[in-house]
Length: 403
Image (cartoon, rainbow, N blue to C red; front, side, top):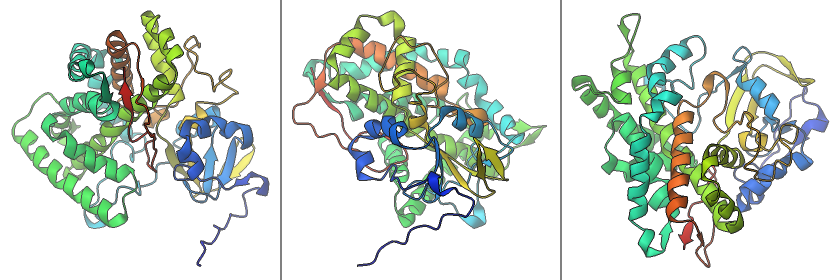
C-alpha cells in the first residue's frame, strides 16, 4: 500500500517547533472543531511549523498578538493566490481587495466603505429585523426548524444579495456554487464552478453597466480612479470576490452559535434575561465561534517572536484558535458575556480586515435578539447527528431544533 511521503522541513525551521496536526480535514478536528481549537493552546507552541494538513508544510500561529503582527505587516506578508478558486491564467483576474496590497488596496475599499461603515450598515437595520421576523413566522408555530436552511443561511444571504443587487430567487444556486468551492471541490469541478459563476456575473455586470442602481455591484462597475474606469478584469475580480465572501461566513457563525445555545439551555436563559447586553453577547459568541482562517506567505526574511521566517514560507493565522489565546483572555474556553471588550480576529485584521464585519455583527445581533424574543427556549432535535465536513469555513452541516 502506497504511503504519502512526509514533507521536507526546511533547514531554518527549529526541530522543536515542528508538529504534525491535521487541521480542518482531520478526524479529531471534525469530531469537535471548537473543542479542538480551544485546546490547541494546551499542547502546541504559539508559533509552529505544521507538516500536517492545512497548511501542508508551513508556519501556523495560534497567538492573537502574533497573528495581528502578521495581518498588519504588508511589508513582510502577502496574500497568495487562493488555490481553491482556480482561474484562467490567460484571462486572470485578482480577487479584489484580498489579493491587492497597499497602497492600491485602499482605493478599491473606498468604493464600498460608505455602505459598509458602522453608520452605513445601520441603514439596513429595519430591513434586517423585518426579514428575521418573516423567517421566524415561517416556522415558529411548527415547534421545529432546520436552523441552517430556515434561518442561518437565508438571513445573512438575503441581506447580502440585496446589498449586492442580485436576485434573491437565485439564492439556492448561489449557495450551491460557493459551498462547493469552500468545501474543497476537486480541481476539475472547482474550475467548472468558477466558469459558471464568471459567466453569470458577466451578464450581471453588463446589465448594471446599462442600468445603474445604488447597489454594490453597480457602484463597482461605475467606479473611477482619477477619472479612469476600472479595468474589466478588476471589475470582475472585485465582484467575484465579494460574491464568494458574502455567502457563507455569517451563516456558519450563526450555525455554530445556535448549536451551542441548543446544548446549553441555562446559558440561553442568561441571554434572554439580559436583552440590553446584546452587543457584548454578540461579540463573545463571535469570538468563540470564528469560522475562518487567514493565509499569507513571507515576501522577505523576518525575525518574528524569536523565530526566523524565510522568504517564501507559508504562514497561516489560525484565527479561531487565536480567539482562545489565554495570554489575551482569562478563561478563554468559557463563554463569558461580561468580558471587557478586546479585539477579536473573527473578521481578521490589518488592511485585509473583512469589509463586511460591521454588517455581519449587525445581522448576528438582530438575529439573536429577534429569535430569543420569540423562541426563548429550544434544543436540538432528539437523535440529531451533528456533522462537520472539511471546509474553508467551519460550521455544522445541519442544526435541527425543536421547542
